[in-house]
Image 1 (cartoon, rainbow, N blue to C red):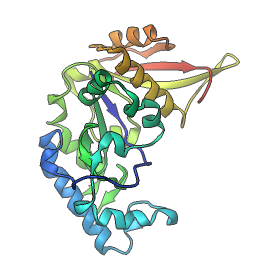
Image 2 (tube, helix red, strand yellow; image 1 turned 30 degrees about the vertical axis):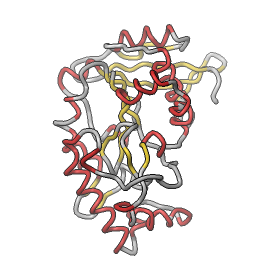
Image 3 (cartoon, rainbow, N blue to C red; image 1 turned 120 degrees about the vertical axis):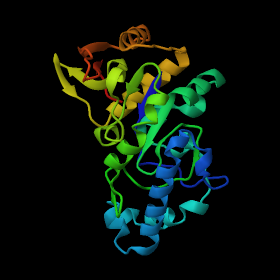
Length: 260
């Protein structure tokens, strides 16, 4: 099982080890692309007065420009510790036992505007660069990474692909060919008074709990159908909204009655 996650805007305040070593990161086929994005981002933040505007940063986040400028020498830490948003809070990597954490290291892949995609054990520094950014000379990062990942990601997607990314990060790689029918996406719906509505912000919390439950249980579903059975067995209310086709992945609806 390969679980595709978005990153979080919230990140650890700083790294605590040696700087990032690009050639030590997972998915070595992305190394050259990562180096190009890193160099471009650092150059922008060191020399362009409008770097904050390019990165879409509010006045209160302009300090992130200086942090980006120092990325080559900044301390790094495991990506699973860098990301601190709602999904990762509910995933709770730090509280997993050794076996579940090992499964997380093998199966989780976090997409990033700067790194393309990393595993949770890859050591990276905290940064600010969303997938929606258009970097000078590189353009929009979604299409940039889609070109770079096209030949790399299929090599590690040898079973079920559980795609929990937001639309911006889904643009960086779209499963194709026979992979499509092995891919499942998840939509979170709240049911209240017999009516259902799409959950926005709190869908991240639900997705974090779903992944944690699968890791703790040691579930290894190989198909969307087996994923459905696994989640039902773990007590989640899940329905098939759309079966997969040669062009569209499976869509599963997770129905909740409370948002937290």
